[in-house]
Amino acid sequence: MPQVVIHPDVPLNVVILSHGERHLAPSYFERGWLICLKDVRIEADFRFLSAIRLPRDVRRGHVKFMLTHEDHAAFDGKRKETWALFRQRVFDQRMSDYFRFVDQVRSVNEQLHTIASTYFPRYRFQRKRVCWKFEEIPEGQNLHIDNIDGCERQGQLRVFTNLSTGLRKWSMAQHLSVYARRHYASAGLDRFVRQPFAFNNALTEAAFGYSHQSVPDPRHLVDFEPGEVWIVNSAVVAHQVRYGTLLALDLLEFPYEDYEDPSRALPAILADLEAACGRQAAV
Ligand SMILES: [Fe+2]
Image (tube, rainbow, N blue to C red; front, side, top):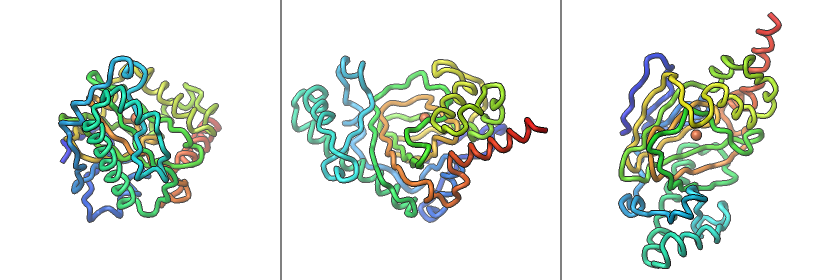
């Protein structure tokens, strides 16, 4: 179970969901809650995976990789160049370690895809990609709201798991609409209200500053153990990594029409905001 510290000044938006409550997952997701899965833990060789070191020149260029096993090529696409990089540069042709890694990727990706379809059976996933992040975040990121490619026309479910041998430390702050109302006029957010990607970029900068800055806004603290799984609609709620190393993140795209409540979709939230803030200005 994750360790959760709820801040009294931030509305509750963290839930620990049991398998028996999985029918509630879409509602929590669409409302921007952090869903921590109680009965699920990814099985993986955490020691082996945590010991993988990227060569310095690889690390300088890239620490995030979309890794797709052959078994999943039908919906993830093939990424031969990425596998070649791991075989040649990361594992230096040590083929037993390389194949051990390939098998770990297949297994972890499969487990993440299965969780997504079990907890969100209504969502018709059109693309599933798993991003493996070999980054180290010792100092933490700033609070932010994700701007996600394609958010104008489709939702993206994000299923995370901590693959390191240590904790991954997160924070959750408030729903996008809280910050958007606060900064709508001062940041000129009306310019972007029909462009969700640009809107989230402008809002994050207005509300939290550039990524190297930090703000004192209150937030809930959530620490995940190795193998724990969490899900969040990261395009509609402010969140933060305070510490972490190896992570796998399943990115699953689906049509907004599949939302249980389509008024929760990002373009609909922005349309409501435009109407509300426009009315405020008129009054
Ligand atoms: Fe994020």
